[in-house]
Length: 51
Image 1 (tube, rainbow, N blue to C red):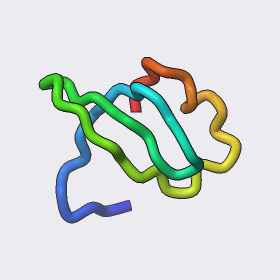
Image 2: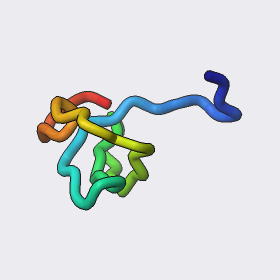
Image 3: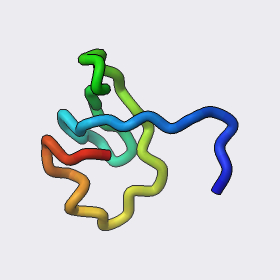
Image 4: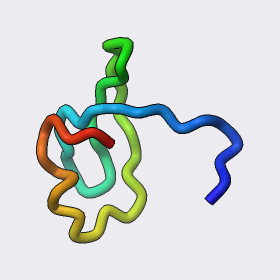
């Protein structure tokens, strides 16, 4: 898969609703991100998971 910009590592703070998550970047900034079709990825719902 090719992306027009570089992907950035982040840590999951919390996941809510089905397609949204609060994340923290290595520089400490936080954002709300869209999660495309999370399906049954239950392991990605744990706070502290590196995504």
